[in-house]
Length: 564
Image (cartoon, rainbow, N blue to C red):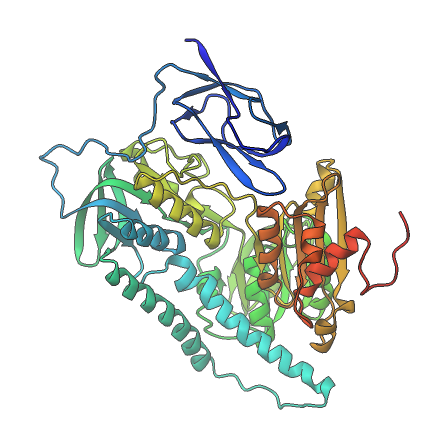
């Protein structure tokens, strides 16, 4: 079939405008008015829509190109493509197929992504059913993950801060632990949030069904709960079934070997604890147990801890926390474990065995794609358990969507929330797409580590031309006043345009500070934009603006820079 050349339409007085996003690729089926590219001038950002439906046969544009009215974008094959409906309306199941509940949309899993998707769908007028295995909403994150761990990390941080006040002339006695009260505090935090979600579900008239859901076919879900089995018939579905902790098959079944969920139960404080896996979750929980009195070892098969973050960020954390650890074993495999009366004996590759009172296994998470009966609905699942989607979060079955841990990495709640909104809006017929430039990551250790966008290590590995500015917190008035000036703020810029493409922070509250960097990357800000933004003084957030000033050579809070 002949192709139609799509060109940049009338965009007013704008000329030589930069292409900052190409939203389609060869072979994509596009609908009329679907956005093809995003342009950005010094005054505005605009998306260029497709003038018609078809399949992308040829791309005549790439990221960074400068275009004006009439510039070619792509060639669209005008044959009737296999077009996905804007508002999916699959054929209903056979009349003989019974169901206890019928709805416009069912959401499987009520974690942050799932409940956000359900609430958004209800707000858009869809009759919504939300299926959750836990007795309360919130999924792993609110019930046995992000929230309870942060409650315990807060307690640990206050305890550590209180000990540090001796250097300020304020001395407290040794803390007395009441683990029952500490557990009650953690549970109260969880209860406040999950109770709020239940109220909001009622306000939105979302029907909540407790139990484990699996697909019967493309339009029905079976839910097995404590009160028996229910069948839900749906027009659309959003899969938000999350992930589970990965297990090591050679470890015995023993209560002294725990995953992060069991570690949060805080049944006691061990004298000697091993964390298997040097990732964020294990090191966060290790921080809690260490502050409460445990001595720590960490074993990691790779060559560093908290891989994904720049090594200079992690180095600050590691120096600050050296006193928590008896041994950090890198490039070391755990090969065997034996349960004995005096503890769990762990064997390592190339090292002597050791005995521990508690072993925390934190070696990553596995998506639950293989546990939901996806094959009965015709949903494609990868070997690793992920369900692949397009930018609208649609699976290969057009009226079924997937979000969160089960859809793609990174496995982060804040990513899942945004994906949930997109999926609900797409199911309601809106032109919503997940097109985030960056997804920030945070390790809620002490000090915290946070990063967003391109990392310095990644940029160097890929041969990117970058500029880096690192503002030390030793020059921050607020950090010094807080007696916590061990950290720094780092910004990474495109070497040619000076636009920010990433950044990292290590220090107290880094997880709160990273949002400005993520926003700057999303908006295409350059060093001048950040440096000229007036930050309040004295604050840790000033370090972002000062790092930008440092990059441009105009920072007056550090000694004069050498002329380049």
